[in-house]
Amino acid sequence: MRERVDRVQLPSHFKHTHQTGGLPGYPAIDIFADAGSVLLSPEPGTIHRWSGRAPTKKAEPGGPYGRTIYLKTATGDYFITHLRWRSPKAQVGMRVRRGQILGSIADYTAATNGVTPSHVHMGKHGSGVT
Image (tube, rainbow, N blue to C red; front, side, top):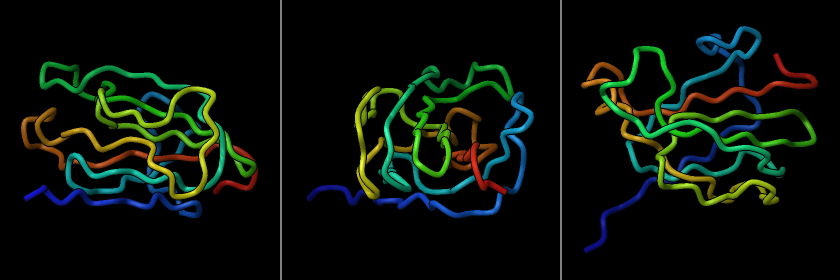
């Protein structure tokens, strides 16, 4: 029997709850879900960058855990971080539609020795963003 994989539809409209550590002016939200959950694009756009490194419990606190995807859309630029290192489904330059798989959530719980549950940190920078 195959293990069930949750799908998380990322929102296109949200109210930011906190700043992104080390990036003033980039407010974001955290969306909590199990490690391995598949993330679906919040709206149509183009992947314009991937960055980051593999999650590790030896990483400096506050440092980047997992990969970050950058999605350019008509309404602004999204950044979505804490993705599994080997899970990108979308590649740089690729156009995606709303609901298309972007990747999956890294095991942030393991990376923080159980301190923080697995989640994605997502923000949107650009026109009309609050």
